[in-house]
Amino acid sequence: MRTGQQSPASRTGMPDCETSKHLLLMEEVMDNITGLKVAILITDGFEQVEMLKPREVLDRAGATTSIVSPNHEHVRSWNFVEWGQVFPVDVPLDRAKPWQF
Image (cartoon, rainbow, N blue to C red; front, side):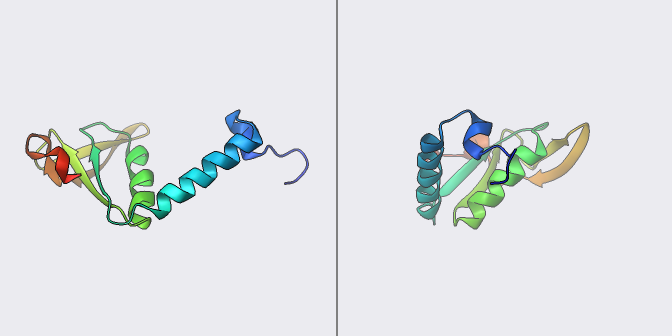
C-alpha cells in the first residue's frame, strides 16, 4: 500500500484483523454457492446498480439467480436520476415458493 492510501479496513472502520476475517469468510461463502438458487426480490424503481452488481457476482460464483417481483412480466429499474433498464420477471411473487430458493 502506498503512503497516504487507506487500507480497506480503515475505509470500513473495522480493524485490519476483522477485515481479514470478513474477507476470508466471504471467499469461503463464495466458493460454496455453486448450484445455490437465489431469489432477487425487486419491483419497479429499484436502483439498477444495486441489483446488477450483486447478481453478476452471484452468477459468476455459480449461483442461479431469479428475479422475483409482484409484477408479472417485467420490472423497470431506476438509474441514478432517470428510468433505467427493464428486466424480465422470472417468477411472479404470488407464484414463488420458499423451497424454490
